[in-house]
Length: 90
Image 1: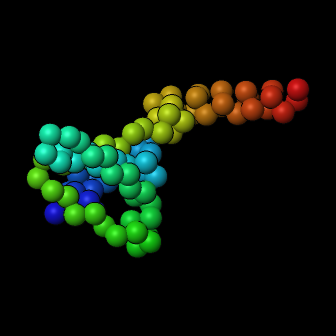
Image 2: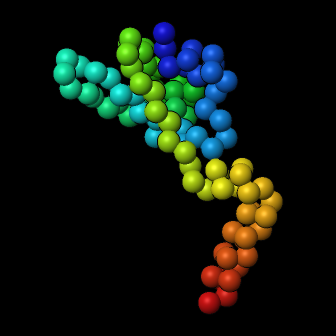
């Protein structure tokens, strides 16, 4: 099964996923290998769609800014804008 098939079956990476930093953790004998994948490039066809192996772990870190906006809504967004405006005035 490929990474894109897994993404489709699970409903996608979500808004807050850091798509440029997806990692596949693969067990090789007694050690683990981390394979970094830019999901944006895979979706655009610029990189091959990795074929997953049994026991692979797919890890997608969270983009902190997007998570804050999603969880805090408009209040968080306005807070960020006001901090940026204050920084520009300095």
